[in-house]
Image 1 (cartoon, rainbow, N blue to C red):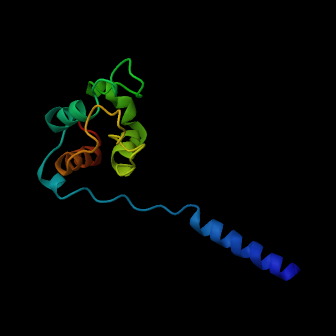
Image 2 (cartoon, rainbow, N blue to C red):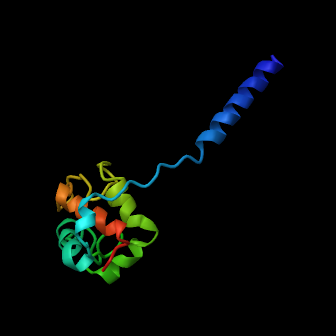
Length: 129
């Protein structure tokens, strides 16, 4: 009985220690990024205004965190890749991915493929203004 308990304990310890710190590498930016210099002012602001900074969402005085009506107001959410996490990493999650798929969401439920590529390029370019 003691040997079985020890074997189980060793097995569990090995499994936990080998899986705890696994991380996937960051995906490469789309090829589109090689030919276009994406900046907030030139391409991203329009997407943010139509998908995020609208009534009931990311504007001052609303329940959503952050005012995304300007680059300066949005900057705190770009640190530590918080924006990337919700818009790119969780894009397919209907509840926490942004934009959300909620019935009460006044904007689009998803970004178009082109908008998503632009956002990916912007993020990979360290959120150039």
